Amino acid sequence: MAMTIDVEHLGGNPPVTVVALAGELDASNYEQVIDVVRTAYAEGSRGLVMDLSELTFMASSGLFAMHSAVRIMRGETPPDPEEGWGALHQMAQDQDAQASNVRLAAAQEPIARVLDRTGMLRLFALDATRADAVAAVQGA
Amino acid sequence: MDHLAEVRQFVRETVADFGGSKRVSDDLVQACDEAICNVMLHGYRGKPGDIDVEAQLRDRRIEIRILDRTPTFDPTTAPKRDADTLPAPTRIGGMGLGIELLRTLTDEVHHSARPDGGNELTLVRSIDSPTQEE
Image (tube, rainbow over all chains, first blue to last red; front, side, top):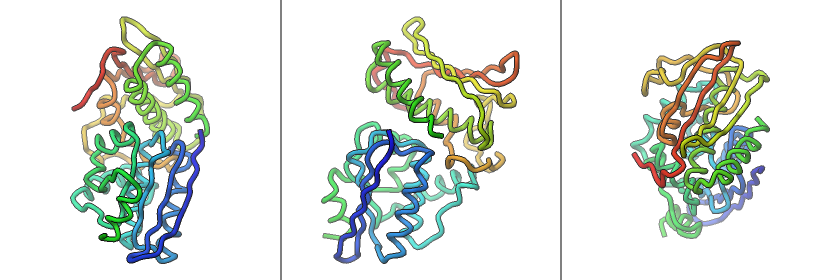
């Protein structure tokens, strides 16, 4: 099953982009997610919500994409996948800094489990709904 | 890389045929994807190569075997959480969390060198294990 990416730009302060992923996020398509986030940041978005309600699978390359999204939305260069294990190490080092402007929403149980198991929930807040996540990013 | 989705589907259908729960299926799908990405990343280094996946149910345990033709490498002996000392792999599908993740998703991980060259990695998970939290 392929993945589809639906992007919605919301106004407000900060401007938020909602990226809704549907299908399976794996090694064949994780770079598309990074590209979408990079574009959103370049176009002025300073908040990001990943709507995972329709996502049924996330490989570790997907976790890498989520981590890259945090870096991009901080205005930093995302880790280069070429670095391989080095990038993983960096991800582990980053765990103490939970992003306030990047939130995940509505993850299905298997995906919430993999996020939890790999320590990624220390990087992201996971909200029950997309609306909750947008409100949290915008400090409502 | 396009075959990853096919392998996941194969694992899902096989675990269902064996009578495994969704939880067991989800974990084995995640583990197989991870193991195969690691073979593509570290073994074939981004070049095309054969990977075979077989599954069987024996003594209420699901065994999934992943066979490749890459140089012998036993991931089960890799040092734990020592990412800095490992060589950077050639890019292919992002990075793998590797053996650590496989261990949390399965009951056992075994490696053997194939007599005619290549590796055989076996992931074992009890079909009756409802949950397996660390």
